[in-house]
Amino acid sequence: MTLLEKMDRAVDATGINRVVFRKIQPRTFRWWPVIMLAALVVGYALMARAGKIPDELLIGAALFYGACLLAFMLRIFGPRMTPTIDQPLDERELTVKARANASSGTIFATGAMLFCFYMAVPDALHLWRPTSLNDWLALGFGLQACHALLPTLIASWLEPRPIADDED
Image (cartoon, rainbow, N blue to C red; front, side, top):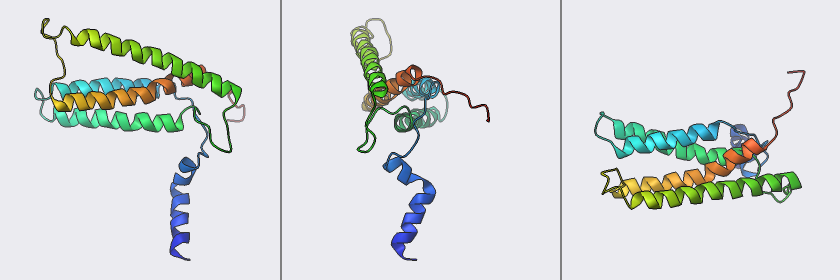
């Protein structure tokens, strides 16, 4: 067996080829995106107020960046919203994608406007606001993760529930 054949067998054994060539079955993740959004918020809050509990920064960073990574994984394995060459999206999938993107865009834009209004008053009301570069960078990563999670969350709830098989 040659080296290339061994490498092909290793890729087949790990299942990476199914992800790369999009041969995976799309799933509806109804609650995982909600859990990831909560983990993002809790992780960011722990990182922002680090210092009260020993290792709070480490716990917050692990929670936050783990949720960021899982957000992008859910986007890949969640409802099918990106076409492939051999499998274009059908009408139902296009409708779900359009509704999910429109709804998530509305939520995202509303959140951005509220954040802008909030950032105008924290000093006067003695509220927290991001000050360090790490806070702003983590906020950017959190926004990217939310951008990946919101359409997945909405599309998962728009998808019909799978029909239970009597043989299971």
